[in-house]
Length: 214
View 1 (cartoon, one colour):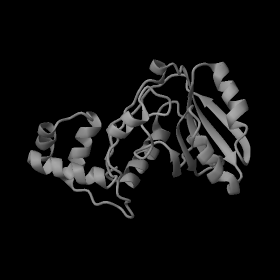
View 2: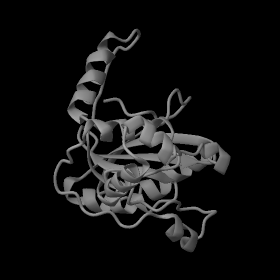
View 3: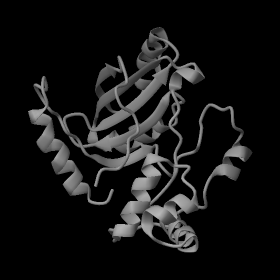
View 4: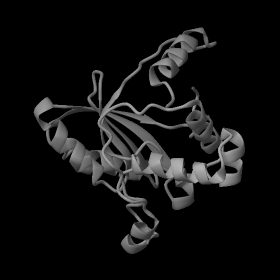
């Protein structure tokens, strides 16, 4: 977040030297259809629409260019990445600012859409024991329509247009393998302009959401 290009180059330079890595395929998100700060808190409950509205932050201002972050901003983000519930006292200690300054700066970053808070929940706790990534190839003229339709599926927690041979990606959760099959042969198969689908089930989660690396 502090320097995207530097972070990407660090990861890509380290992967080839990682033991047992035999290949790397890197893709870039071009346009998110679902997932992130502007997506609803939940599609499937248990929160009601009114409860979601009460918990949702004010609509963020549209950011049209890069945001310049200071060293103190980076310290603020790194502390929140480690603990999203860190209080103003902890954030003040990390940045060297007063609690009043921390409160004001965090409000600015949130209102500008630079920072948002998310909740990472184990899908199994909600009855979804089967997770998979879908790489979809869609006719270019139908990409927007397919992405918007995919975003409405209750099984989808993230969907975006990407670079690569497959131009649409989705992260999905289903109760069982049978439910995943029914989803692939039903709603996914009906997507407009669909040419092919590659399904990559998650066998074991090694690492989930992680701290920001500058």
